[in-house]
Each structure stands twice: as structure tokens, then as C-alpha cells.
Image 1 (cartoon, rainbow, N blue to C red):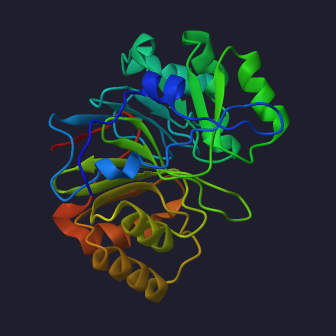
Image 2: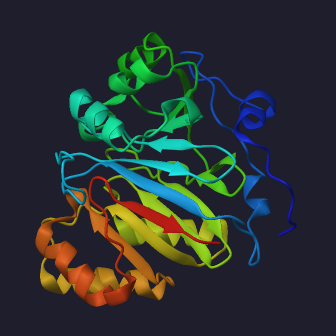
Image 3: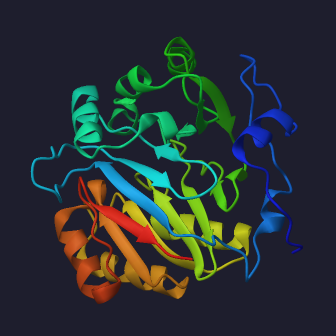
Length: 282
């Protein structure tokens, strides 16, 4: 693949060819975006991921609740990924972490479940006028509600660049479609998930194939609560076979399942929880 300079978010949104869905909402449509991903491409400065909403607390004084939200800072654009369940808890945790809403350039929603979308009204009280990027088959009423909050709906079907080195995976079709974020680093891809309803190993396999690069790290919700120990061992082996060196499991993964992942990855386990930050180095 030939390396080229990827456009920053506003250029993507303004200059990319866009298609319109039936309701006239634009799609991110960037068929050549993955040409910038090579064996040697990747971020040149550290990226910080702050956990705003999670089932578990890392920092005393924060509030845990069923749901998930993280803030990614360090790429060319700052991105809020999911918004948790309850607006009041999102707002409280956001404030206690002293995060800056004015610096956020886009919201990305992994899938249409309230534990990932419910806090967006609280965010819209802090900032409006920016894109909210969601899978193409979100319900029309939800999309309209985003516009009503002062956000700009953009739909996703295929992989697309959000800014230099940060991508949406494109949509994984399932009874409930879902997207994840993919950060390109020189060590490999870092995959940030919401719930992984379509199946975490299959999703990672597809990402490795479409981005043509090994996966170095994955973290987020894996939706493995009902998996047996034997099934978990197969899943962990599947992740490692794809090159995963570091793994952080939380939210809907299940406590027993999280402990098994922690045990198998050892020093490569990534702790999450509300109030924690993950530093991703180039």
C-alpha cells in the first residue's frame, strides 16, 4: 500500500464523496482510506483514552453503572466513543475527570443500545454542531433526535478515516449492527470496542484482513457473559493468534470472563474502569 496523508476530520466530512440515504443523511464514503495503513504507518505521539462510563470504578468518587463511554485524545481530532446510559452519571463523571467538551470534534456511537447512547443528551448540553457518526441502520427517530440536539448525523457502512490514523471499522452486520474504532500504531492496530455483539474474534479477524495489519491491542466490551471456561480459552487463543499482545475487557464481558482474560494476558492485561486512563504509545 502507498502511504499518503489522510485528511483530517473536517476535510473528510466536507470533501469526501458522500452518498445520501433515503432520509438525506450523509454517509462517510472513503473507499481509498486504508491505503494509508502500512506496516510502518501509525501515530507519532501518545494517545490518551479516558474511561468516562463503565460497569466498574477505577477512581474513588466516580460512579459505576451498566454502560460504556471513552474519550480518545491525541490524534488530529478528539473523539467521544459512546456515551453510557444515564445522562446524569455521564455528566457527573465527565465533570469529575475535568475533561474538556469544547475540544471534542466528533461523537462515534458503536451501536443502538441505550447503554451506549443514553448519555448523549448530557453531552449535547456541553457541545453541539459536531458530527455524530453511527451505523447506517440506526432508527430514523434516533437519527432525528440527534439533529434535534444540535448534532450532525453521519452514517457509516464501510471503513472510513475519521482523522489521521483513526478509523471507523465500518459496520459489522448482525441482528444489531455495530462499528468499532481502529487506531493505527507502528506496533499494530489498536481496536476499541463497544459491546462486540457480532463476536469479538470474528470482528478482529475481519479488521486484520481489511486493514492488512496485525492487531496489537484490543479493549472494551466483549459480550462474553454466557461463555464457558472452555469457550473463553478458545476466544483468548483466537485473539492471540491474530497478534493481540494487550487486551482490556470490561462492561458486558462478564466478571468471570474478565478474570480469565486477565489471567491469560498477564502483564498485557489493560485495566479500565471509570476514571482510568489508557496511554497508547506509538
